[in-house]
Image 1: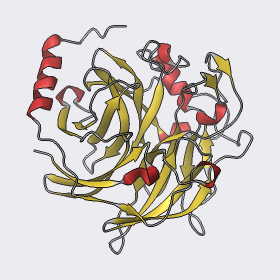
Image 2: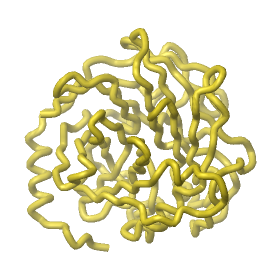
Image 3: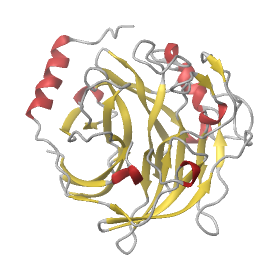
Image 4: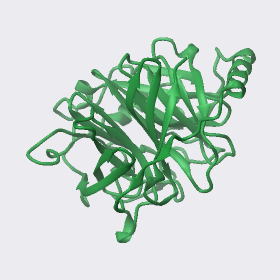
Length: 341
């Protein structure tokens, strides 16, 4: 598939901007005060998403997901430290009650209801959201319905209320004609199978960031209405979803999203599969995706894949953000300062 609007000049300009950007250097490490919950009671080494609500008393309340669990986990972030709290179960051993209908996905193999496979987290209007990968399993190519859910977690009497669920994200992906052919394909460089890794919510607009497919140097966001995704009943989503294509660089896709107060998005990009290409942070205006700009590349870290991004504060034209990594113990979070100009 080729994108009709792609030009060699556009990709050349992106490469020039990336080359001229200063390398991003972390201000400090964010130390975990204890272990995040991983598989078999071990420390998590697969952190894949984070979102935090606005600070209170110098602390941020955050929700974190990893891609090999049925749960999410709250944490308290303060200056230079992150304190894991007890896990929040999202799903059990069977499909939960959910809006919409469980999708039928043509992955290479059938699979069982298993892990939530959390890849993205968002916070908006006092509510957290978490989304599964919506892709076939990476190594076995299985369709696991448990990873095709969107969860909404509202405040309750304690850490959170009972999660609500929706199956309708798969309807949005199937209706996004530019990327729909890649839904249910293997997650390798040859098939370029669709896989969600980023999530942001701005008002009623929910944005899904796709790690793959990556096509002709472009990455993609698929949008939807929060109200429509969670409306009662089993009817599928029927509206044509908003769709954004933007220059991310060759073989790069979305690894996470984080919204700014003005509706623009920070986009963490990295290898669409396992290619040797750098991770970077882009600034994207959904109203003008052609103006996407790279703010800088992240330093290369052995076995560490940048997959979690959240904004802590914005002061004029400077942002404080934290980045977390898959493949290392407890995410090894780092704080960065980003210049918007």
